[in-house]
Image (cartoon, rainbow, N blue to C red; front, side, top):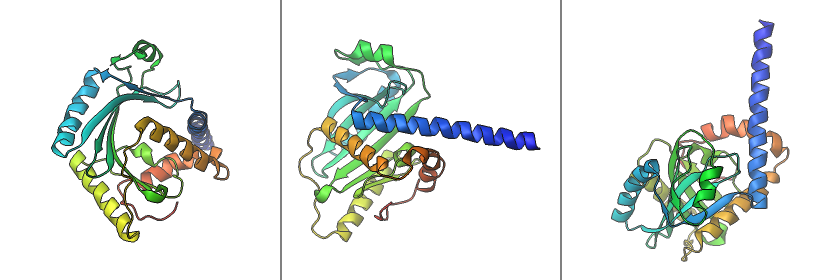
Length: 243
């Protein structure tokens, strides 16, 4: 019995070390801009294109204009993600698709071969999200990726995740959250300009990194956030309370 107990403790400590080490590596990458984030002209990966077709159809019906394809990876140890982004001038909202099959995408561009050589195998991951920026540095993101809840966001940055909804249903949840935020802040308006998406993402990464690093003992909290935070908050609408 003691052997089993010690084995369980040893496994937990190993998992905690792996999770916390991964978190620290990711935060340092965000802070020091060591991640990979670049626009490409096209992505031909079959798995991505299948998801893209569904997202593009919804986007066209709902007046979202395609802006770009881009590749993203937090660190050199992480899988490469194929991404696409659309912008709604009417709703002042970004709609983004993320996909990783564990193999590098057939991206067309000057960095395609380098990306293909660097990518490492990983399990398939797919998700979409909506993001709306407001005045006073407020922001609402609604995602289908559970990992979006892993890290505490800086004040005014609100994230909710629903991992079992269709794109249309996720969009409805996002609009409901936007309406709720506007109701609590009379006169609040979304930022009119879409801006440069790559710059916006880079600023988001740095802001998140600085906030996480301001939390006492943050290097050791990753296992708690991984086991508890992203599971407890999943499929729950925003209440606009601080973390």
